[in-house]
Length: 250
Image (cartoon, rainbow, N blue to C red):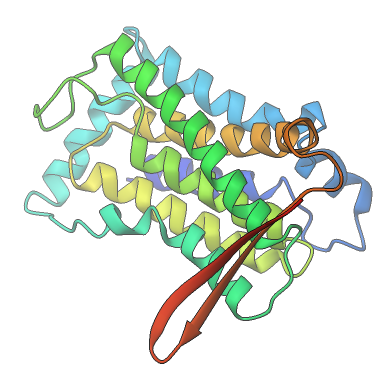
């Protein structure tokens, strides 16, 4: 269990190393490690993905998968809490909640929504392709689509999106997002749905998918819309009902 907790602490806090604890005090470090244009920002998620891919062979990393699963089963044989099916969307909902509360993010809500859709497409494409190619059996034996963890990829993609949008307002928003993401990954293992390496790889895929979106979206927006076009998405809450207004400026 100490090994498991250590790995997930690394997962959560190393991911947060992409932004500085004090934005004003370390601007160069924050810029290099968090900016999707910098190669340094891709090192950590790439390492996570590589860790997962190595586990597909017969090696110590795969042995750690097996021993971790055995330990979790021994310590919590009847564990069943499927809140992870909902937690994967929590960082994204938090982003829109902050928008509704008037907290200014890096982009407007329309651009945020476009990037959510693009990130979802990238994440889903990578996860689906790997699941189809690897055919790894889940720990509970239910199916052969264990690698990588789709839930973990989704929640880490959303956590990185939350981080990118609001790190300028407060780094603690990013910390909260990655805490929820890490908890979701742990629950996938406690529920006997994924191996440790599935979750680590899923985290890397989610983070790198969002970073690629932030890298590509400005060019895509200019290509499709030009500088004089603007997509506007405005959420609202009136008379106990949520709604939105979508407009496009020509």
